[in-house]
Length: 156
Image: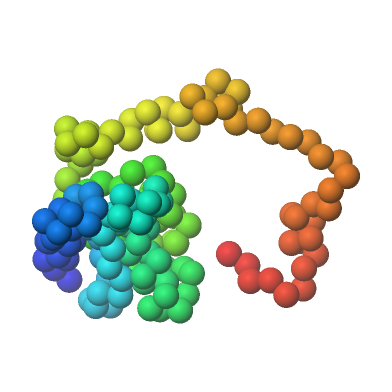
């Protein structure tokens, strides 16, 4: 498999996205058995959706095309090292490997800095820049108990 050609395809998606003004300078593809099964570009501003990163869009596309929520046999090729959100999505999708062109340092130099998120992930909830608060409720049916006892569920 020619990893460079697939990375180049992701870069071409990113470049086209910038040229058309559709979104940020990011593109990604997912490949299974040497064939592209998912494509995505950054559509954050176009769709007014902060989760519409190229990698997430490619994952969504591949899942729909393959009719599966796990992409165990797929390789992700992306124009840039994935951000923390995309990193999580890659693991949730069970993607086998990731190849990227530009680094997170290149992204930072272009104005896309995720370093504060990496730092926030290691910070206690009560002192994060956006505080996280745990609320204990004893009178509500617990969704995890329902899940554990559910007969009709798909494990993931």
